[in-house]
Length: 378
Image 1 (tube, one colour):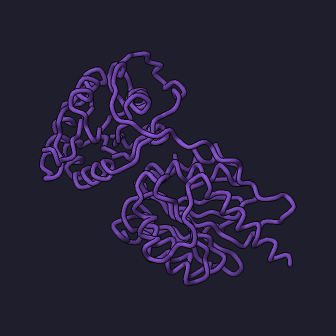
Image 2: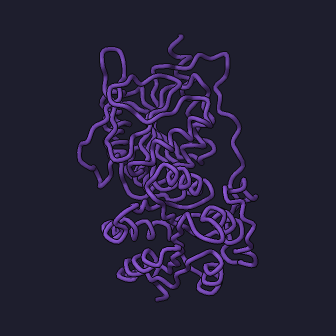
Image 3: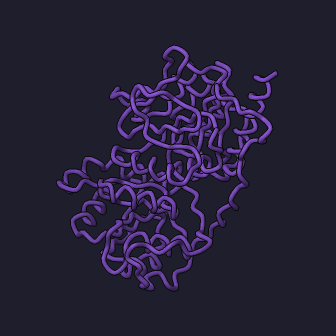
């Protein structure tokens, strides 16, 4: 057992606790060391069993999952996989959980929970394995109150894991005002585990006249619309889910819809989005490979590729195709990644020109774009 991933399940549903415990204990490399119906019970189990990963429901009695998560990440940072209902409200809550430090999430069905969770068993245990290797950071201050406004001391007195504080916010990455940005460039971003926060940090630094941005973030149906809307409310560029046939315009970011494949094509002098129901690639839908391969083919030297935190190798070979076609590519460095999988594989494939900390990527992109604008004027 000492070599197994120790998991604590926190969920107010006895059925869900039983199912998750069964799914976990069937794996040769993990074991459920405790299950709790509420955060007060979870506190004692976590303190006694010292888990490697926690699965956490969002809606629970005595304290909701978000408040529990925020206290956990301030007092005892531990990898957490959220268990969220597939609803619009569930998507919003899940995105907030990722902001607070959750590594990933599983969307449980609203009906047919037993059969639905069994069908998701492979996905659940894979996310637990990834979470066990993820880097988690201590929240440096208490976040804004959650909707319940609970003041329960569920995690008071818990100590344990140490973690580094999150890096300071980067300076705005606005390009020099005297330089016209190159509007021919397109910024192409791929990400998976940990990517929602990495993407947010980059996009929030872009000026309103930034080049177009196309993004594939591994995310299931029902969550990307909320993700895009949240980014749109925070950024100076416009952010939306990509729609089939729409023009790719400067000052806009387009996010691959969950459960669809997203690529770009040329229509006359314009770039346009292609959103379709083609099969998964590298087991993903959307797949970074699909987007980046189209960027290599359509954009060539007008592409700036960015590979962010994530597990696996999706997009690495296509990013090499982008480089061979003349694109300039950047990968997030290991220290700032939640999971250094996708960037590592892109680096090993020879696809990357620069490896940078997350907080330096936006500025590096805009400096590259500004330099292209100068060359274009000359």
